[in-house]
Image 1 (tube, helix red, strand yellow):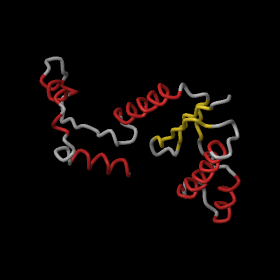
Image 2 (cartoon, rainbow, N blue to C red):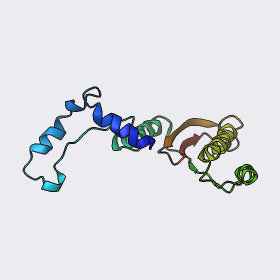
Image 3 (cartoon, helix red, strand yellow):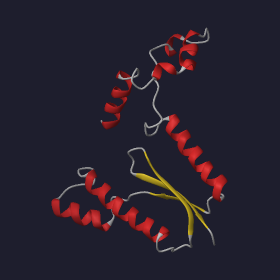
Length: 153
Protein backbone atom coordinates (compact mmCIF):
# COMPACT_ATOMS: atom_id res chain seq x y z
CA UNK A 1 0.00 0.00 0.00
CA UNK A 2 2.81 2.39 0.87
CA UNK A 3 4.64 1.60 -2.35
CA UNK A 4 1.43 2.17 -4.31
CA UNK A 5 1.00 5.61 -2.74
CA UNK A 6 4.60 6.52 -3.50
CA UNK A 7 4.19 5.46 -7.13
CA UNK A 8 0.98 7.54 -7.42
CA UNK A 9 2.81 10.56 -6.02
CA UNK A 10 5.69 10.11 -8.45
CA UNK A 11 3.31 9.68 -11.41
CA UNK A 12 1.27 12.78 -10.50
CA UNK A 13 4.28 15.02 -9.77
CA UNK A 14 6.58 14.36 -12.72
CA UNK A 15 6.89 18.08 -13.47
CA UNK A 16 8.09 18.77 -9.91
CA UNK A 17 10.49 15.83 -10.10
CA UNK A 18 11.85 17.07 -13.47
CA UNK A 19 10.82 13.88 -15.24
CA UNK A 20 10.41 15.77 -18.53
CA UNK A 21 14.18 16.43 -18.65
CA UNK A 22 14.93 12.88 -19.76
CA UNK A 23 15.23 13.05 -23.53
CA UNK A 24 15.72 9.30 -23.97
CA UNK A 25 12.13 8.58 -22.98
CA UNK A 26 10.61 11.02 -25.43
CA UNK A 27 12.93 9.84 -28.23
CA UNK A 28 12.05 6.19 -27.65
CA UNK A 29 8.33 6.94 -27.93
CA UNK A 30 8.93 8.45 -31.40
CA UNK A 31 10.84 5.37 -32.53
CA UNK A 32 9.22 3.25 -35.23
CA UNK A 33 10.16 0.04 -33.42
CA UNK A 34 7.54 0.41 -30.68
CA UNK A 35 4.74 -2.09 -30.62
CA UNK A 36 1.20 -1.10 -29.78
CA UNK A 37 1.36 -2.84 -26.40
CA UNK A 38 4.36 -0.77 -25.32
CA UNK A 39 2.92 2.65 -26.09
CA UNK A 40 1.60 4.54 -23.09
CA UNK A 41 2.47 7.35 -20.75
CA UNK A 42 5.89 6.80 -19.24
CA UNK A 43 7.20 8.33 -16.09
CA UNK A 44 10.61 8.43 -14.45
CA UNK A 45 11.28 6.86 -11.08
CA UNK A 46 13.69 8.94 -8.99
CA UNK A 47 16.83 7.29 -7.63
CA UNK A 48 15.32 7.55 -4.14
CA UNK A 49 12.54 5.06 -5.00
CA UNK A 50 13.56 1.88 -3.17
CA UNK A 51 13.77 -1.08 -5.51
CA UNK A 52 13.90 0.94 -8.74
CA UNK A 53 16.59 0.47 -11.37
CA UNK A 54 18.29 3.79 -10.57
CA UNK A 55 18.25 2.99 -6.82
CA UNK A 56 19.90 -0.38 -7.43
CA UNK A 57 22.46 1.21 -9.77
CA UNK A 58 23.25 3.80 -7.12
CA UNK A 59 23.83 1.06 -4.52
CA UNK A 60 26.05 -0.82 -6.94
CA UNK A 61 28.15 2.24 -7.75
CA UNK A 62 28.45 3.09 -4.04
CA UNK A 63 29.67 -0.44 -3.36
CA UNK A 64 32.16 -0.28 -6.22
CA UNK A 65 33.46 3.09 -4.97
CA UNK A 66 34.06 1.58 -1.53
CA UNK A 67 35.80 -1.40 -3.16
CA UNK A 68 38.07 0.83 -5.22
CA UNK A 69 39.05 2.82 -2.13
CA UNK A 70 39.52 0.10 0.54
CA UNK A 71 39.54 -3.13 -1.47
CA UNK A 72 36.96 -5.78 -2.07
CA UNK A 73 34.89 -6.99 0.88
CA UNK A 74 36.09 -9.94 2.90
CA UNK A 75 32.56 -10.67 4.03
CA UNK A 76 29.19 -10.20 2.34
CA UNK A 77 26.41 -10.64 4.86
CA UNK A 78 22.66 -10.89 4.34
CA UNK A 79 20.66 -10.81 7.55
CA UNK A 80 16.99 -11.80 7.35
CA UNK A 81 14.25 -12.25 9.91
CA UNK A 82 12.78 -15.50 11.17
CA UNK A 83 9.22 -15.06 12.51
CA UNK A 84 9.76 -18.16 14.68
CA UNK A 85 12.42 -16.48 16.83
CA UNK A 86 11.67 -17.07 20.51
CA UNK A 87 11.24 -13.34 21.24
CA UNK A 88 8.58 -13.01 18.54
CA UNK A 89 6.84 -16.28 19.39
CA UNK A 90 6.65 -15.40 23.09
CA UNK A 91 4.99 -12.05 22.41
CA UNK A 92 2.59 -13.30 19.73
CA UNK A 93 1.57 -16.46 21.59
CA UNK A 94 0.58 -14.47 24.66
CA UNK A 95 -1.74 -12.36 22.46
CA UNK A 96 -2.89 -15.40 20.40
CA UNK A 97 -1.76 -13.83 17.12
CA UNK A 98 0.23 -14.97 14.10
CA UNK A 99 3.33 -13.19 12.73
CA UNK A 100 1.33 -11.80 9.81
CA UNK A 101 -1.01 -10.04 12.26
CA UNK A 102 1.74 -7.89 13.77
CA UNK A 103 4.51 -7.06 11.29
CA UNK A 104 5.49 -4.11 13.50
CA UNK A 105 6.62 -6.45 16.28
CA UNK A 106 8.61 -8.54 13.81
CA UNK A 107 10.28 -5.44 12.36
CA UNK A 108 11.12 -4.13 15.83
CA UNK A 109 12.70 -7.41 16.99
CA UNK A 110 14.59 -7.67 13.70
CA UNK A 111 15.94 -4.14 14.09
CA UNK A 112 17.10 -4.86 17.64
CA UNK A 113 18.90 -8.03 16.53
CA UNK A 114 20.41 -6.25 13.52
CA UNK A 115 21.71 -3.41 15.68
CA UNK A 116 23.30 -5.95 18.03
CA UNK A 117 24.96 -7.68 15.09
CA UNK A 118 26.27 -4.35 13.85
CA UNK A 119 27.69 -3.51 17.30
CA UNK A 120 29.33 -6.95 17.50
CA UNK A 121 30.99 -6.49 14.12
CA UNK A 122 31.96 -2.81 14.24
CA UNK A 123 32.46 -1.91 17.91
CA UNK A 124 33.39 -5.23 19.54
CA UNK A 125 35.46 -6.37 16.52
CA UNK A 126 34.29 -9.98 16.74
CA UNK A 127 35.75 -10.85 13.33
CA UNK A 128 38.58 -8.29 13.33
CA UNK A 129 38.89 -4.54 12.82
CA UNK A 130 36.42 -3.11 10.30
CA UNK A 131 37.94 -0.66 7.83
CA UNK A 132 34.84 -0.11 5.66
CA UNK A 133 31.19 -0.75 6.24
CA UNK A 134 28.09 -0.04 4.14
CA UNK A 135 24.57 -1.21 4.73
CA UNK A 136 21.29 -0.45 3.08
CA UNK A 137 17.65 -1.38 3.40
CA UNK A 138 16.33 -3.24 0.37
CA UNK A 139 12.60 -2.95 -0.35
CA UNK A 140 9.97 -3.56 2.31
CA UNK A 141 11.16 -7.12 2.89
CA UNK A 142 13.10 -6.02 5.97
CA UNK A 143 16.40 -7.22 4.64
CA UNK A 144 19.74 -5.55 5.24
CA UNK A 145 22.85 -6.07 3.17
CA UNK A 146 26.28 -5.32 4.58
CA UNK A 147 29.56 -4.83 2.79
CA UNK A 148 32.36 -5.30 5.30
CA UNK A 149 36.08 -5.25 4.75
CA UNK A 150 38.42 -6.34 7.53
CA UNK A 151 42.05 -5.42 7.94
CA UNK A 152 43.14 -8.79 9.36
CA UNK A 153 41.06 -11.71 8.09
